Image (tube, rainbow, N blue to C red; front, side, top):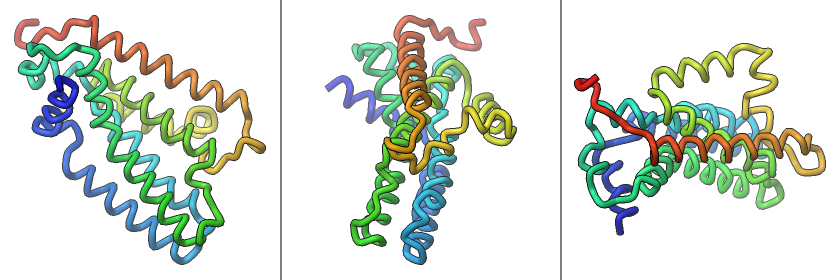
Length: 209
């Protein structure tokens, strides 16, 4: 039950502000209207949801812990790895739900003939971007990580290489397999490093520094 306690804690001490949840609702509604007018526009419909997920999943752990927001949880009997896992789950879940909703809308609009929303590239884009965004922010704050993502997504030279949007809709037959494998490996390594940081790292209060 300790993991469920951690999940509930991160709902009481919000990791994802309500404004972001509302933004996902707006993005999914806009995606639905776009798909109803053109069932082949799944990539266009998914792009805002993916970009929003990058910023929302970058919830930040260390700075919030140093400010004492997680003291009650960190001093409980809940293992640190479960705390980190719960924090990650709560951070990325709104975007994953938004993605699944767009997938269901695409299936309904195309009468089950198009599944771009669950293409291998799309899965890697959402899964990888969610984990990398959370993992990078675990070492910093949401604000600092947001600045990094803005640079990555808006500088063309960086976006061509690092933006997850380029993977949307890519099928296994048309994908750059090296790129897909590299993206998966990067997300796993980043997630492992972030988990280790939470489990082994210290989070002294800012007032004590």
